[in-house]
Length: 147
Image 1 (cartoon, helix red, strand yellow):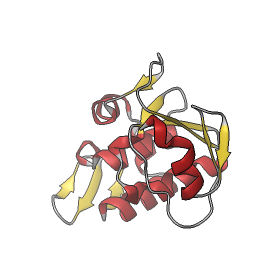
Image 2 (tube, one colour):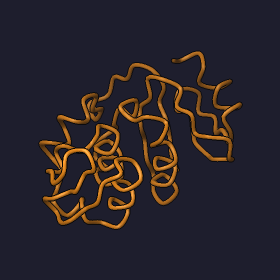
Image 3 (cartoon, rainbow, N blue to C red):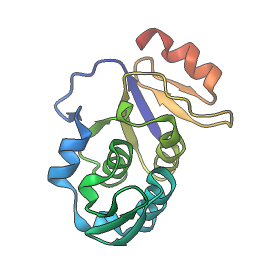
């Protein structure tokens, strides 16, 4: 299940600058996993060629280090369970992917803003209060005071 801590976070496992962390820690095999391919295609409109090459409509052939900050953060959330990542580096176009990753495993993220998780029902736990919310209205009510 997805759990979210809103606002400034003090935790030894917390990574604020996800782009720098990704560039220095990602594993080549993360890039070619089916979920990673889907995320890269949907968010960055790019095609994974192999572990070291991504075809971007903007940059042509590029390294995974050139992926957007949002994609880097999503790949970290999906592949590195040892840390808590600043998901405010993601745009709202990443929200559905965060929810998807949180469907299959325990995921904890930090948000410094109120991300739009859409009109559909979802389930996430607001760690600041311990409450589980199932829609944006409830999320705004529960998390609004922390962001």
